[in-house]
Image (cartoon, rainbow, N blue to C red; front, side, top):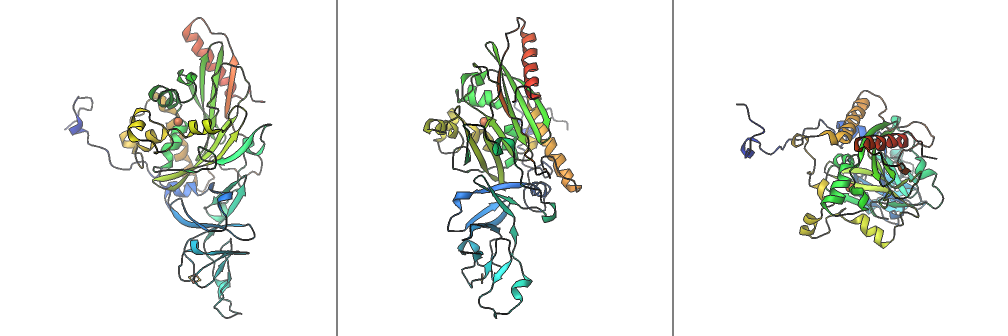
Length: 424
Ligand code: FES
Ligand SMILES: [Fe+2]
């Protein structure tokens, strides 16, 4: 029988969708399409300064691991069970040359080689016949990055312009959404990166639904464009503010990095360039959780004092009374409530979801590239500093008398900003 999908009171004929239906887009485990794709990239897995005298157990891309710093300062990322008889290496003792298992003293180097087996005969070649599973790590600007893909495919650690070449007055702070803290959310990483390419929620959720979380000008409905970049995509949100056009442009760097420009902007004072204050990865822990980790970039405009930290933290966790979250929901409430893994069969995308569909298309293409033996978009084999595209510019432009004409010219300014005209 044909079901009439537009009939009122029709829930009986529209049962809840429960099937995961994204063809592997949201899977992160080893051997899965999404998981193999993600394993071609470096991901930050810890803050440098959290690795002190004790090893830590972590989970990344559905793999249990132990991360540690040895007494020479080197970092190791290894499988948790000692290759001798399986004691967990989170009870291991950091040594000058790696991590020593607490049970019988096997010494495992940061690269996984077995360096000592104290109870075996002194000249035994046994240790040279084994290696423990270890992944390469690199420390960069306060973060520890890991590469968990095939060794022969390992790219160099990517270095981005806005991080490598700080502008005068800028300061880098390892962070989640607030300084020094990782944020762990109980949902799949993809739905959260989709949010990064969904500027509609900025004026709806963050301004109309929950009251002005940033400046009132965020409530002005922007003209929107979505453009591909060599490393991913950007959205361009262009707003009319008095005699200015305020253009906010954000990067999504494939697969899981997003950048955000100042949330203090009101579009009232002309400016050529405003860079990102946030540069973040959503690193999957498993299919149904991820951690938000990266850097905040402090500037004169975005100082991370107590007031700003409170503002940035608002709505980013489940630490408010539930009724308060219902009255003024934040990003956490909107995105985690989509489901542990958002089911695509539930949704009905509209024209304003262009950023989401574009991101998913790129993700699918990346997964296919990896399957076909190619490097996916966003992966660079160059050692050079990678250009990013985030911009926050305010361009003086008198309002056109005709509203449609003005929309058109506002959008044109957005395109000029996107083309790099105002980025010195
Ligand atoms: S279990 Fe680790 S040394 Fe024996
Ligand atoms: Fe948001």
